[in-house]
Image (cartoon, rainbow, N blue to C red; front, side, top):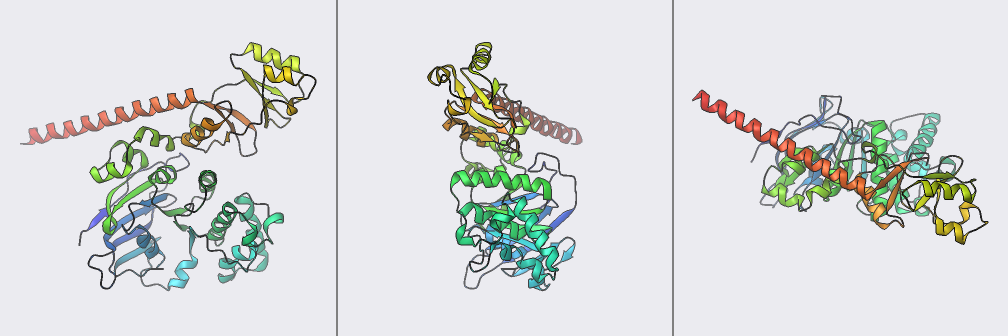
Amino acid sequence: MTDTTITPAPAATASGSVATSDKIMIKLENLGKQYPKEPKPAVDDLTLEIPEGEIVILVGPSGCGKTTTMKMINRIIEPTSGRIILDGEDVTRADPDQLRRKIGYVIQQIGLFPHMTIAENIATVPELLGWDKKKINARIDELLQTVSMAPETYRNRYPKQLSGGQRQRVGVARALSGDPAVMLMDEPFGAIDPITRDRLQNEFLRLQAEVRKTIVFVTHDIDEAIKMGDRIAILQEGSRIAQYDTPEQILTAPANDFVADFIGRGASLKRLNLSRVRDMKLTEWPTVQIGDDHARVLDVLRASDKGFTLVLDEQRRPRRWVSAPDLQRGAGRPLDEIGLPPEATVEPQATLNDALNELITANYSVAIVVDAGGQYQGIVDIDSITEAIRTMRTDARARARVGLDADDSADDAAQVGR
């Protein structure tokens, strides 16, 4: 067997901040899984350390053992060899039912009980843990609000009455119900349409910034891994680790040809999943208020170099895009009845890739940035995206140069030593 020992380097978190804990929450020691009559192990002597409070992505081609590895952590699959250390405790031979109650679990198929209401689904683990009814009810309402689902609307509905995205949100809420320190997520957004998947990914990253769980996340999609992960473990056959590093390092310095091939072409575009809208300077744009008259709007347009203005309501929420021709065609009509609706909006935690996808399909080729309450923050346009790509490319080259200089210094020191 091949002993692959990986100790993580410091990483930035998915929320953009630097990880504050050096504590290792999960440690897999020489973990192996050999199925009967199979010539090779599904997992081959894997050693991996997962820091507290981070999202670690297991990604690799089909059949590489990533899901098997994750399922051994909560012992849905029993390991053939090795140890699982959870928060300093060897749980390899612990009661598996008790272990699973301490670990949240989200799967692609969601797995909600169809005959139970949403509230009853979320209450499953707290009831097993013996919580009192008042505490359980408070937790249900708290979690529904956390995943942006009004308790009074959704508490008593059944899974079949929800959309796929809503069911996935409930699946996340149920996994969080017992307040576990660790969550396992097996391609949780894989069965959802691309638009809903992007929104759920962003919502989950916002949630993770608040709850700061230790998460092992399995996906086959390198773009999702780059967007979601604080660290990524790219796995080869047998869960042998080809590279375990931050997304930025994997994109700028692939460890070998396997990693480079798995990442594929377009590394510059993939880096758009590393940067968040909140980290860039937003473009200034002319705005008017919903109650302004047409003359005021024309004055704002003439004073700017833009062909259209954004109409905001009393709470500074975007309502319409309005141009001079719109004003002519809609003479005498209120501003909220003319122009076009602002269909392309993103929140600050969205990636630049999300923003690019939105603005490409927007009527005016810009994306409006709003906060969690829908209030206007600024604009992302193609010029700001291009500038961000240019900056990332320059920074990557500088880091590569520093790495080369460090290698040269090491070589010089070795020569002196001889």
